[in-house]
Image 1: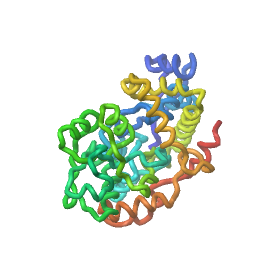
Image 2: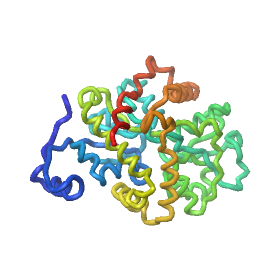
Image 3: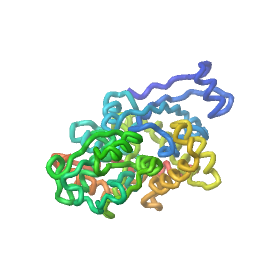
Length: 339
């Protein structure tokens, strides 16, 4: 059944949206839920630009952004029909497809790896092999960063539970405590995690091998049923996101983008200096890996690399029957053609 349309004219929500997004007139809006694997903020600057600058409203879409705990939960709520759009990692998505869930990547958002294997500077750890017999902290037990770091160890011939151990310690201050209490020797970190650790006095060394820094990270996804039944919503959603990305990449809009990110996580913006530095990192991570293709493009060879790594590490039992069903580039031209 195509996703329902809800008329918001006359409601309090419509009054608020009319004042902030699309002028003082009511219109029919399509309400969708987007599930993020962690609290939003600067990392999703294109999304919040699209909300604040009215790009979603231009498409007749109202987005309800919800944060859950990790990519696995993103995929669970999508499969349960509780979210139309999600932002999972490629590893968990392939795991979900192996389990029978027909969820499709539509937009490669973090075109460069957003994850790293890090240790404290001065720890004498310089390579993943140095962590043999050690404990590696993770934010969540089944997050995309776990599959990423496990693949690093697997390439070094090291197996989870035999040559090293994962310990779920949480993020932010909990990860800091893990290092300070010597509960962990290294950490599987995302971008904001590294910035947070450094901000709180943990000097880090990056143990991620160069060949792993090119692995792409989380992106936007939908179920195939939604993709086929509500293509106009998918087109409008992606068009708004690309406009939000272009807005954020324009230096003239830097301050406006930082302000717009408060929609997702105002606490991150309290330290303006930290937020500005973090924003520079996110600009790099989300810039198109293939500029001639535009925002969101997914290279088939990168998906093959991810799948091979997951099979080698045991996270996938075997290659999927048709890996191309896990992603699509069919909307990339449409989204990037919009001004």
